[in-house]
Image (cartoon, rainbow, N blue to C red):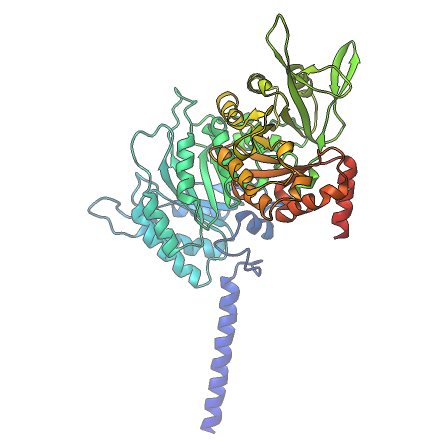
Length: 577
């Protein structure tokens, strides 16, 4: 009988333990978080919020934020609101005083005391919400112990949402002294204790109304890239919104360095942020790569205009074709090339097929006896049309398109760049611009073509906000693209910060060493390849091998300047395979 009672007790105890485990598992799991890939501290924030039903698409503009959630009262208000992301500051209690305890608390210096510790803050947020977390560190002293707390909660299965860890680690605009968090120590602590986090890494900044044009410099941005380029984590760069447009060429370059990168635009309490500037940034970046942490009424005004698909958009001339003509991760085959036609009714005008794509302008130089030479666009069956007039006519063309200026006469390069620079400043070239030429350099020297160094130098000096599109002379390609020819081209272009699109002849590519396209693409994260069929008399059978070889390397970074007939043949090939 005692044995039977003991068996009953054991059975009941075991059942209670199992029930307790089930209950705890249910309580600790975030509702809707059955997908471990999404409900993790290293998850993409937009994927998580979309899975939770907070947002309808992966668009950083849809994320709402609560700032400086550094007290019990602010935390409770934020938890009861519909904001999606909580941003809070972490320091140590009594920082730099005799009362310093080392305990992480929620406070923004100069405040060094708080009514809530990080431990209690995290317990409350994790228990009662599904909101994402961003912790901002202004002192290295708070980082190690804070990450230890996150580690313990994560190992216990509590942190089932994205976590961002923020610090300003590079000195930025208008800051005369070094107040940034030590980058080496901060990154080492994160790697050691909590590598799952998305890193939010910024610059110290000061907005000076008397010097509103002072902004992030190329050197500042390159220093940041040097610190984070070899990391494995996702990285978002918090940027002071009032300063971003003036520095957009640098941040366009930075975003192109890695798919892991995004931007978070934030607004200082007294910063005058232009909605037009925000729209420009929106137009020149993929929706999932920029977050907007802004105050009202700017945020509502911006959001209303940004989500209006009918508004006119403005694009940076030096941007890639993503997202204007190619979806992020999309096939380069979706981008078409078009050539203008001329019509004469009193005044010569240019017409373009009513399609989206890149408009190819072959530019030469018209020499006049009484005036300076004029860059002109060569149009089949027509007298040449002045490049400036052609660009002004194109400026009124609606839709999605870019310009590929191919310099036929080397003497037309600098005058053409000068025209592009002036019209761009006036707002008449609100589209991506490629500038290219067949060049002569190193092992592919050939008379009559532009000297390669002149293309690089002229772009850098006159109008650097373009994609550079160099090609090899046809007469040196009888044996394909030899390795030395590729090496010399890459050596010529290695100092360029601009996007590159190497122009390759499909027939010659089919005769080239394996790995030719891969070498070109590996030279820069901003590099693409454009395959063309311009060998006279070539058939699709002759270009097919080269086109498919390029396509096999990377569909997203290969473009095709092929005839409509060859494009149809290629599409048929793809559909069969």
